[in-house]
Image (cartoon, rainbow, N blue to C red; front, side, top):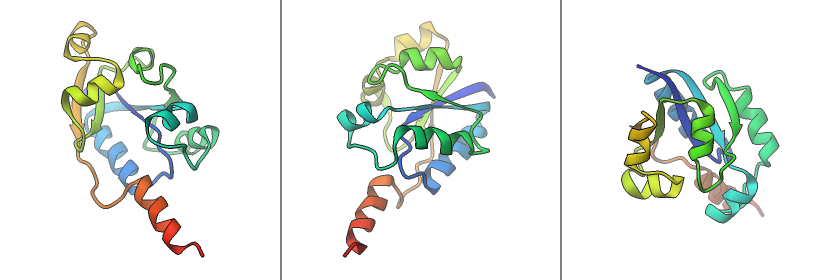
Length: 142
């Protein structure tokens, strides 16, 4: 069992897939810490979030599955946020794994070893995503 697991993301339109991720993370570590991407970073990475940054922080802060919430201060380079979180493990959904994910987060296997941080992949919940929620919302808007 790890002491603290770091989950990074935008967490726009919080949904059951996010909650399942938090629950799975809890089975791996005593504490779940969430690094939230800024609106500017999310806009560069994927799309502008629907839910503003401050609101996403507030919602996650009230989620009983999450112990600590903070800003992913490094944007594309998550290393500062991960080190600042004092996590000994990084978790991510198993829909995206390996070197491509690590590169997008700004680290590699060597960095993980140097900092004694493990990487674990957690079950991804199929059939639900913020992108899917937005697509469905567009379909019902007249």
